[in-house]
Image (cartoon, rainbow, N blue to C red; front, side, top):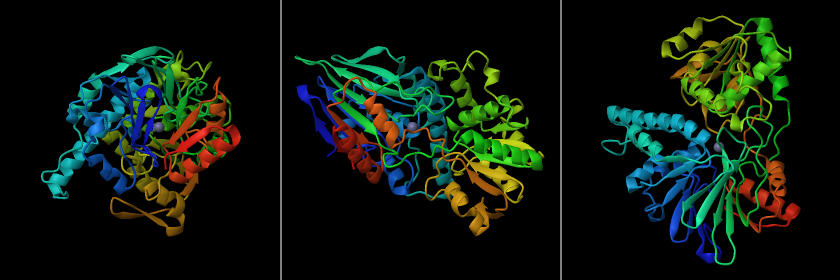
Length: 464
Ligand SMILES: [Zn+2]
């Protein structure tokens, strides 16, 4: 079941992020108006990515407004495409989401344009000429339609429907969206968790308690898992001590938004606690650099008492550099250790990180440290699981010997695990009447549904 009916003619229908973790899209209909909650891109396997090219369903045309819970591509990456069906309305989100979305959507549009140019040059496309999914101009246009709403405030989205954002604690700007829909006898509330955090990140405040709601739409990405509680700080400390002793290099492949900022601040914490010597730390990712500026400019999402909004230099490692141009990045190959290089992409699917691996993987004294999830089939997944066994990794059509140590920290997820999700439901002043589970692989969603039924006795509908 993908469509739900509630009192007063309220309807909710899912067009993505149901039985899967990407492509989040849900249409809320009330008072004869339609609001789209999230407009995500499908990512991952080819069959999933191909869905981005499917015609836009009738139900997503003639929308009155769009609301975005946070700036990750699987929640906002299809937004510019809505212009192709004539969407001219407002896009509501928090100020932090607006600022990150500007970076992420423009980057995505650049990549779409590059892909279509490449396809036309090489003839590698079923469509002639190949067109981008959307252009930079489209991304700029949809960004002009953004209206921000601060955490805690109320906004009328369409007559009779208001929305309030509370903190989701996932990335900067991430929000839980609570709709209040006017009814004759009583108001009805539907709340969307978006992606939920857990309060164990050093750079992001924990999620606010779940507000009072009749219906909750809850993500279930890690609905069948409890995260390892290993100390990221201790692991990072060990690796930095080792490269410092050997005068070698620590290469950290990292997502540009969120993870890169968390790791930089963890290194600074280790320095402040006197647990590591001072080593040069280089951020080699223009997108991560832009995202860091956004992170620092939204203290409303920082944990209380952190204080780096007042003294931004307290955020960065003591010997910190960033590279901007491709030339500066290339020249890093000549730098001798001890050295820490953070670069993207986090799953090694492209970007500057590949050049660093080419240079650093053949040396057994270097370390590659994974700090994020590696999706099956990606180069990162291969290196993490099979790189040492196979002995080499293909980069730019060349086999590179894997002699460096391969390590990983698996406790830095920005998503709530199964226990966090149940605790969050418990944090509400009143139990929801029903919960719809979305944004998860079927096993994860099903497992969370059973856990919620057993531990909380709430009616749950898993979208699988
Ligand atoms: Zn997310």
